[in-house]
Each structure stands twice: as structure tokens, then as C-alpha cells.
Image (tube, rainbow, N blue to C red; front, side, top):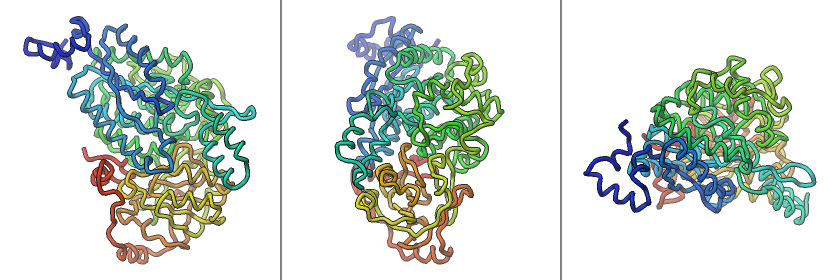
Length: 557
């Protein structure tokens, strides 16, 4: 069969190309096989990636066993936890587009027949899936797996509790020694942070989309199952090439519906409202915040995984993982079972073949006995967010589902965080952090530090926070992000002043300010044009091209 890699391996005119490949150590028979590019985001700074240099050997073994030739190359990656609460966080979301671009460049300059996409963390996973949608060559994703939870005094803990502990320490509720104990216990080793934060949400949703094998999102990083999965992934990559199954055969409108449904059942990160529409956009499929809102009304929330509850992803693994979620939703006729998967069979057939089902009803509940009747995420609209905003309602205390209070305005995450830890906020306030959107930030910083500080000082049940920026998957409380249009585009959030009464109704799906349309417009008309905070480098270029959050913060096709 003709192969894409023939462009660099076949015919006398490709003698120079083969000469260079021979310099890499490739033999004639290796150049005749399907060549599988393995995009590996290994580095020594991200815990979710630090073991990928070992795991990639298992992927290569699988490729070889199936009759392919593995070729490894690397991409960048940003650890959101380490980048948090300083200028580095501005680069996190923009790194997604840079990663997608780099894969497009590598896989086009060196025409691989297929791709294995190997990553673990927040923006790297969607960046790789965006590239797969763009390139549309046979591709399969594998993550490095979740981290095991740590333990403090016999109780499971994770990174989210360290961020909250900072607030508790600052407010005098724990000692520095206790803070250090939590710090040293929360992250026991390799893997993406142990809760259903953005990294693990996206790893699991890669399964529901059909782009990863079963248990990709839940088999722990340090378990043997992860090695088995890596070998199977490499083997499947070659099979996908031979069968000519491409990402857009898998990434259909129905598959994206299934993915959003799984997201709602999981109570996943709000960042999925950026990433799923972005992946769909490059697959030429229109997915918007409205789709999230519509699906949320139909799909029950079935799990209570950190930060929304007591369980961690390892518990989810033993309970049946994404296959159990999809099986439960399928049995209730809430998803599309005919969608194709990298397993090589339609979703419904795959679930039957692997005997998917709930193994621990305390961790994964049935449709008849959900944690909440509607999905873990909610989309809010109103005069403050005409194009929408998103909240992880599964992680909001009951008493904050409806809240009204005076606005307290901040123009940066850093100012908001410092005010919180200094104890200078008041009960009932609605903290507004603006000019942190895709263009305004630029880069749409995560607000884990402020939300965790609120939780740490015990005010997450008394104070709300809204922003045109975004939140970590580890955030909990009445944290409403992606307010669109953003302040930099003169969205209504830019018109707010200290003391304006903001009304939050999460069950009613509304976000309003107690102002007339005329007053909002008058204030916006009086504002000067937005002055970019950063005027050179990658972020400056990013700000000129990026779309609004409700459209996934994407670059033009």
C-alpha cells in the first residue's frame, strides 16, 4: 500500500532523505514499515510528564510488535500548578495553540503515517487533539495517568488541599509546620494531580471522544496497567494506519455530544468549555457554550471526585472509569453508541466487549441515583454575560447556588489574591476579577489561588468570584469564569463598579447585574480603548489572534 511516509522513503529521488534517516539508525526494513510519530511531552518539571521517557518505551514496543516503526519527538508543556499566581500562568492557555502548531509542523515536515499523542496535563492534551483534528492522519492519544493521592493523618489529600492550606495558614488556622506537612504529603509521585482537575478530566474525555483506549484517563501513572495500555496504544496506532481510520472519522458531532455528556456525568473541569469547542472547531464541527448548557440539563452528575467530593481518580479507576460512565449513560439511552473509537469498533460494541459497568456504586452512581439530577457544569447567561459564563456547579455549596451581593472590583488575579489573604474582604461580596480574558490577560489566567484562599479561610460559602479569566479544575466554590464578552472587548463586565449588586442564580442559569441596559451601555461608551498589558513577544501576537472564551479561545483556521 502507498503510505504517507513514502514522501521521504520511496524512489531514487528520495536517496538524500533515506541517507539522513540512515544517519538516525533506521534500516531498510524499518523505512518500509508504517512510520509512527510519537509526540512525547516528557520533561523534568511536570510531575505528570516526568515518567514519560520510560513509558514511551512501552509505546515503541507496541508499534514494533504491530509491524510499524516508532519515531519519537518532543513538545513543550506547562505545569499549571507551578505557573500559578505569577506571570507564567498567562502562558498556560496560549501554550495549547503553540503545541498544536508544533505537531502540525513536525508531522508535515516529516510525513509520518500515523501519530501517537503522549501527554498528561492541562493544555498539552487538548493541544495534541487539536493537532490531530487539523492533520487528520491516523492518531491515538495516551496519557501518563493520574497521580495517586497523598495522605495526611490517614486521609487522602491532593494538590488542591495545599492551595487551600495557604489560605488557612494566612488566616492563622494552621501553623507553618502543619502547612509544610500538607505540602510534603499531597503529591507523592509521578502522574497528573490526583483529583478530577483539568488534566484528568481531559484524559478521561479523550476516551469518551473515542481518541484513547479504555481506562486511559483513570489507570494510575505508577500501575502496571499504564504500561499495558501504552503497549496496546502503540499496537493500535499501526492498526489505525492499516485500516485508514482518521481522527475526523472519530470526532463527529455525536462523539462531541458523548464527550460533553461524559463531562457532565464526571463533574469535570470548567476548562473543558474551552478545550472541547476548540478541538471541535478544527474538526470543522460547531460546538458552543450553549451545547454545554443544553447537555447539562439532560445528563445527571454521577461522581463526587475531588474537588467536588471525597474521592480521587484512583477510586474512579477501581469503580470502572469512563467505560462505566459511558455504559451507564448508554443503558439509559443518553448517548450515541454508534460512534467510532480508536479501539476499532463502535462505542457500544466496545463497551460490551470489555464488559464495562459500575464496580463501586459509592464512587460512580447510577442514573437513577445521581449525585445531582443535572450535569456537573452549568452555563449562565444574562446582562453580565450575554455570550455566557461557566461554573462547576457540582463544587458549589448549596447556600451559594443563589447569591446576590455588592461587587468588589479587581483588575488582576494577583490583587484579588493579596486582598483575600490579607483578610480585607467582606461576607456577601462578589469579587470581580476582570481584564484577565484571552485578549485582556492576555492568556486567560487560572484563578486557583484566589478560590483556594477563599476556601482556606472558610469564606467559599459566603463570597463569590466571577471573572473573564478561568479557573483550575481544582477550584471549588461559587467561581464563575469565562464571562463573555470579556472586559478587553468592552463586555458588560467592564462596566461594573464597586458596590453594583450582582445576582447569581445557578439553578436558574443566570448572571446579572442590577443595572439597566442603558446604564451599562453609557458606562461602556465612557471607557477608553483597551490598552494591551503586554506589547511584544508571543503573548502580544496571541492577543491579536485569539477568539473569545465562549468560542474556545481559538486561532482562526
